[in-house]
Length: 60
Image (cartoon, rainbow, N blue to C red; front, side):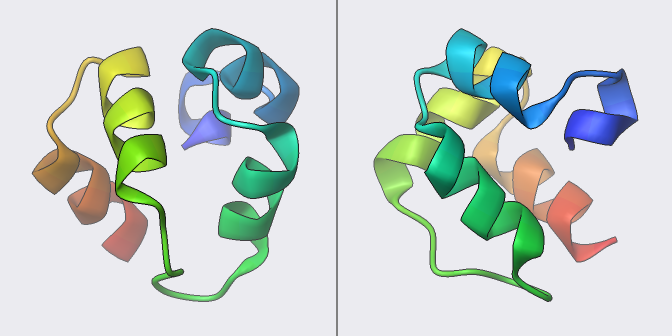
């Protein structure tokens, strides 16, 4: 996600309000991580996508 649009995890954390360590754990986990729905909503809003689109990206 971050590399896709040129943002760093720090920038995404700042823009989304999702803590950096949370994003880092999501980025490190292979496949699907157990994610907090609140964090997913914030990330979807940050990237102006639906949660479904966010999952589609994660599965790639």
